[in-house]
Picture (cartoon, helix red, strand yellow):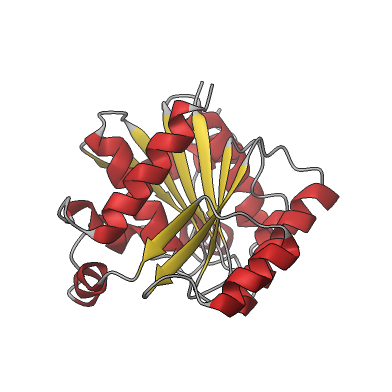
Length: 254
């Protein structure tokens, strides 16, 4: 059975970088093959992992709806679409990537989300670990895209607003009664220790961070140069912080 990890938080918090470093940790531990799912319409997990995305599920569904496709006799539309979605999986050593991409129309991600959830549920059973990078905010939760999650990593930047967003996400998880076994808060891109105002807000909201990820110029340089974060050196401060977090979380996963 797959252990499912989802990463969520507001935009600009470094969610994709965190997801990439989680995947890096799992690959270094030989925990693969890993299923990576980019559920953010603004898809960039592939770039962060150094994988070339030729087609997203959103573009596939759009072309399926727009074009007159000759389907072989005896094959249903659902079977044909499932076949094409399998072809959209990017395969690499130790990791496979599925990218949702844009929706079927302006601001419409509903149908792709339904298909993604069904497709991901089917796929994930074939992998020891699944890591999903969600879109910014909380819409994916209200649409119930993120379900049956073993570990929900809630990422905030080093700001009071970011922390408050995490509190709202936690409330929404409870309100929707989502199947999330455990939630862990990450404060990301922290320059020199937590600011007293952030500490005060965390205390007010009753949030105890599971990890503080330091601001790491090495990560920034890799992003600027479009170098895969999987290739970050072990000396990276962000890598070390994520490694420590994942060791702690996975030691207690059972």
